[in-house]
Length: 514
Image 1 (cartoon, rainbow, N blue to C red):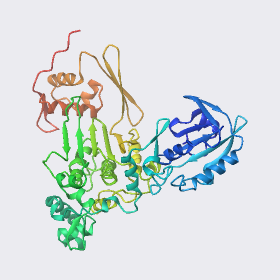
Image 2 (image 1 turned 90 degrees about the vertical axis):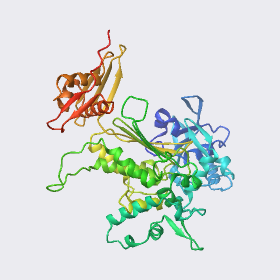
Image 3 (image 1 turned 135 degrees about the vertical axis):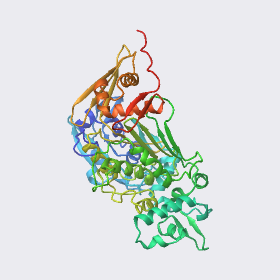
Image 4 (image 1 turned 60 degrees about the vertical axis):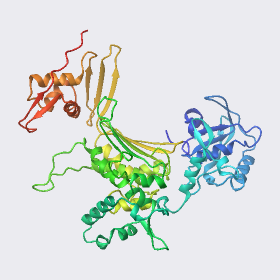
């Protein structure tokens, strides 16, 4: 269904099918309703919505068209008020957003409120930004907490939020090893660039990671701090800074792998986090056998590049003054990347591509100079395109509030639907790229891993394809179970992949008695 903020929706469509979190109906029997402006603020501060005057809602889900006697008078009141800065902080409406429609023989006034540009947010009612700023929650408008208002005010600034200088620090407070690794990477990628021969301190100034003050002292910017600082030093300026990668590839409740900025075993900064995490994210993606030349295999695919771009996007668009930090989670065939902050442009525009508005433009530049990230704003667009061409389910992008966060979730394999029967058995239905489906049923008294162990105990030369045929799993599913068995110490590969054999180290558990 088209968005309620487009004129393709008639009043009848909106009232019958409109999403309640994007539609607000208000009676106007007593004149222009004062509560209109709370909804106006709420829609403008989120993804927009439609307000219909002349429709009451006596009960949830029940809408009654009452109509308005003088829609022209209501419209004049609307325009007079929205253009009065003492009443409303910003006018985001154009004439095309306001119209009179007939609904069952009665006139109603329809106001389509678009999402406000970030330089206009927060849109608030009255003169107090902290008391007059609203957002939408389900079917109601609520006053934003101070933290959310401050985040919107930060995003108003034309200057990048990571350009501020950490006045209490000098470049000597940065992690020297991280700076050295960046300088080496830059020099290897751009050996003829004039900056490669600069001292570290001068390179940091050139790339926007530091500035020289009037006192002659070179101090890091926020971009330089999060990129090259150590975790403890970063917390002195950004107390909510946090980076976390969590990997759980089995049914165990414990993480099978974790990279956390606070564990003290590495720097804990954004630059090192990227290079520690992106190989882990892409490790299980299929790599078709292809050669760049006679001796060099191509181990990078569009899917690898798209995931790296998604990780880079989270790092350069994060609000490092927001709560909860950056969290990357990997499960079997599922990856999610979330970061603090909201979209600075409409989500639909971000997904369509071609428009870039990085919250941390200096960090964006630091990354792009070593070929991490794209300046074209095509990251999400490219991800959706690559996933479509691979036959994967489309990525999911969610913007949430209190705390403000963006979460990207992707499946790295075919769609798997899992159902549990009353007798305890489970059935997995897998839809492949070509549209074919396979089903695997696991009975309550037997597990997939035990079946694989039983097969290999009797036929240690079985291939992944043969195991897949016997178990009903895909080859990816077999490979995942084999890795889990090897990690648990129950299975070992003897010899090479071709010509070797499997060795079951512990006999399979006997099946449970019925």
